[in-house]
Image (cartoon, rainbow, N blue to C red; front, side, top):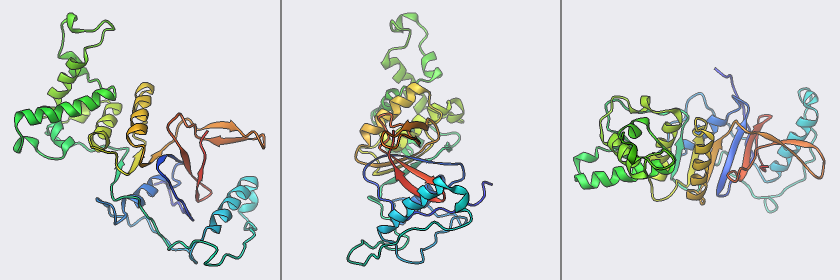
Length: 309
């Protein structure tokens, strides 16, 4: 429905860190996630849609292609109109095999097989105990009551740390003397309410949750419930429904928990302006917010890595 996007990726190497993936609607951001999730080396690879086609370049790419790409981007920004009519003239130094590092055609090398995506749409089965779906198995079939309670407590603790507060959980305690001085329920009472919900079969639990709460459940299920962060984590606007306080909390937890992973976050908001001291001109950039380490930007049908503010 958004038309066709042709995107060229000459050479892109990402070290461990958090990257904002930006670009206009329909530029190919979500498609990039589909391509990464389809890698055969992943523990759980997906089938690539027939609508997505990958084309090999006319020749094997070398490092000098990065310089050509940057020159093309700069020329396109300076004179976008002329770019429509003629090609950009780029000086091409001769690079031999010994001088430049050759890259295989259509090569995508993942740092690990542990690649996880949190999409912008969440699926939740009907008539299911939340704890079973979160752990992806019917835990009552093989575990004792004590073990089940321990597993539910772990989920509840993680949700509590993300400021997950359900109305239903709060409503289970009605006496005024159980509230703290600031009017909120004590931590143990909130966790008790969350555990009760996790262990009860629900017709459609997600329909009772806000968009932010759904995001937090998915983050706990796919990230924080595990011993370590996935080595490659793709987040597709999962933080968009979060309120400002929760967003800060989630970003802080992700930054600390996933410090050794490559995390790519599709990002639309808070793209600001920064004045460059050398040239004295304003350039569009993504603010770091003590979270992002770099910006993967799609523009002029090219993908390039740029710094954050």
